[in-house]
Amino acid sequence: MDLDLLAALRTPDGETALATAAKLTDGDPLLAAATLRAAGVPAGLAAAALTQAELRRRAVGKFGPDAAGMYFTRAGLEQATRGPVAARRAARLRAAGVRTMVDVGCGLGADAIAAARTGIRVYGVEADPLTAAMAAANAEATGVADRFTVTTGDATRFDVTQFDVTRFGATRFGGDPVDAVFCDPARRRAGTGRRVFDPAAYSPPWDFLLGLAERVPRTVFKVAPGIDHAVLPAGAEAEWVSVDGDLVEAAVWCGPLADVPRRATVLAGPVAHDLTGPGTGRAPVGPVRRYLYDPDGAVVRSHLVAQFADTVDGTLADPEIAYVYADRAVPTPYARCLEVVDVLPFSLKRLRALLRDRAVGRVEILKRGSALEPERLRRDLRLSGPESASLVLTRVADAPTVLLCHPVR
Image (cartoon, rainbow, N blue to C red; front, side, top):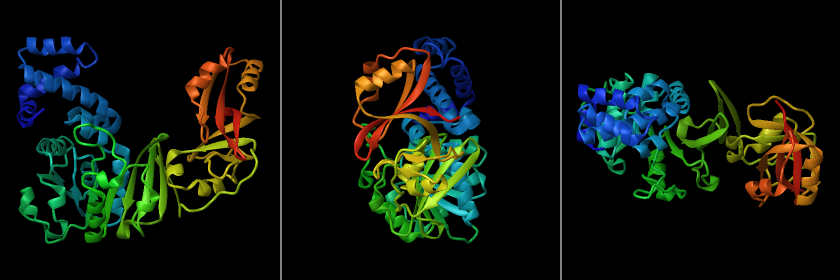
């Protein structure tokens, strides 16, 4: 894909090709390409239309119905913020009084579009010309082109303290300075697509992100969920976000935008739940109890397991393992609850006999603090029978232990 092909896709003939391609994405790609060419679509345009149709289909999970009219690159779609997460962040920025924002490295525009929908005026900066053109096209497709404008440029050379709206083709700015900055740095290595875990290797790099926060107090930037807490800037809020049990991102809120040291945000359907705290506490340690809680990834990564344990009057069986045990099953958005049926020191022979006695033929295997490979264990158990159960591989008082459990519905 290049700028010429993107322009061609946006013509009436290109839109017809896209509509035809959308009907062919579930079939044989070679047959789909032949069908488009038979309809008189040039080979290059046909290939671009089929690629966009496939990316749009995949993008529905992140963008919902908007995906049908948007444009994507594979890398851009993979990094793009999910719609509910971007919408919630935008609402928080708006509630904090943000009216104008620079999105440094705006990518395909997911976060900028969400912010623009709240009424925030967004100026996007994107280094890649094709991605910048797609972001502008996406602003039009989602109806926010009057509030989201994109320019092509190197984010590290863009001085947000000397903001010049003429670079965006704007005729006036209204006399107010830009009052917030957002940045979602690339976290994959160019050319290989491999994930980058060292913040210094982000693009733009960690030092640049910290500099943004020094120059514009109200700054937010995304980071990998596995980031080391030790590198987070003092006084900032670090937030981990999960969607329907899937940990999807972390973000750092700086300056006046920081409300608490650590936050776990759990999005379950349309509802958001926040667990907050210092991220430094330790839950008490005790024996295995009747119920086991498996905390959401956002709770674990934010180091808020102790805060969660307080909500269910829970304890840990091992101080280094984030399984919480309690005497009651309490409804909670922050963890999955299982009833503990049997506790035994790990022994393949004893476990196999127990499952045979219980006629268990299907198991899900959870593990924390165990070196066992779940799929190999599943094969070694030689399961048969009509019943199902959950096996939890863990440590109790530093001893390898297996818990036979049933999920609490």
